[in-house]
Image (cartoon, rainbow, N blue to C red; front, side):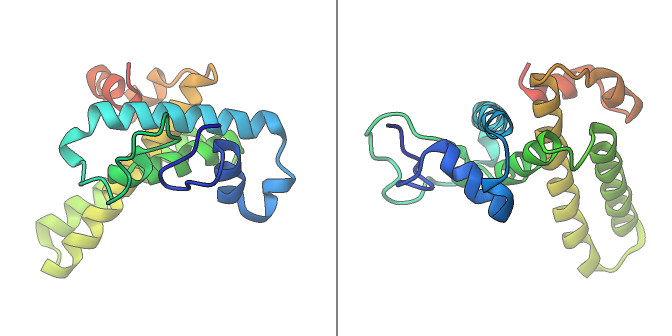
Length: 170
């Protein structure tokens, strides 16, 4: 049985159910498996596309004892937000369009902070914009994996095709 470096004594399904909290026991197996699949895809995409954002792997995490679930969860900033976004989309808590609007709003607030806000407002605005980008990436990965077209919504939000492809790992 594979184990996670983030959660060494849990299966991927157990990690997802823990993330779900109290509703984990009520969530159907199909949704749990869809979240596992999306998180595995996010793990692959972030490992490949965000190497420049990687932080050192935590001590003890390098053990070569076979495949791990979601290793990027702890080693690449933003992967956790992407995984949250994917899970929220699968559960019906957010749409692609809502996630894109949240990201656009966060970017607008960042631009405002950079152009005239106080020095103390830029950092939080930048963090929120990055979190919103990671969340929308997770939403789009989950949606695309489950057959929902994301290209039109992305284009309407101002994303070019190359950025979309990079974000979802195409």
